[in-house]
Image (cartoon, rainbow, N blue to C red; front, side, top):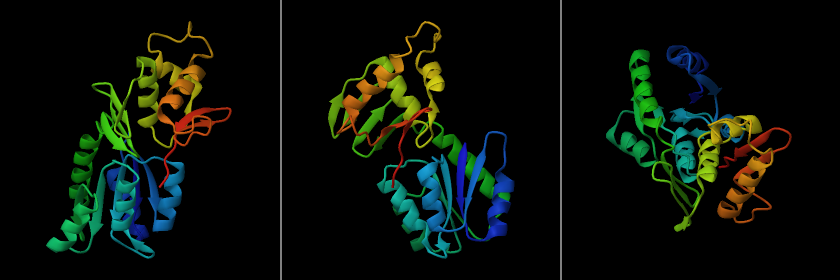
Length: 225
């Protein structure tokens, strides 16, 4: 799991990273809103830990931006304010949980573990940027209109969307889509599947906003605030 920590106190930020470390976790440390926004353009965190009071603004604003952009990854807020109004404001902005300072790192880890379990199925059913995807029932909509996808197209969409912002190589996509083996798959099959999926989801398939080609490598679902 990729975790982005936004906290301007360097020692606390690195202490949180150390407390949460695990074999299946990687961390992006940010010390300002500007840095977090820049990192988000190149990566797709699966969980956010956001301080409220930052030198260039508020983590609450960043949380609201994430939700407005359709990012459904769990968000835990760190705040020195434990009044009911501050807590309610955080939850209204889209936060999933909060911890007030000073806090126990053991408690923080338990909260993050709980959010990680909750977020592990977050891509089964999602609504983002005019789309509604339900990968369990294989129902897909664009701007409220049903979109019919083949099983191949649905697998391609799920692979790309569940790794938002991350480039997947052609080899990785072939293995995820044709799970019975790729030795007999035509080398153009992936390109055809991408073209058909773009035709169904993109407003301008020839100038895709979401299913982006990373030349010489593969494809990604673009994440933009």
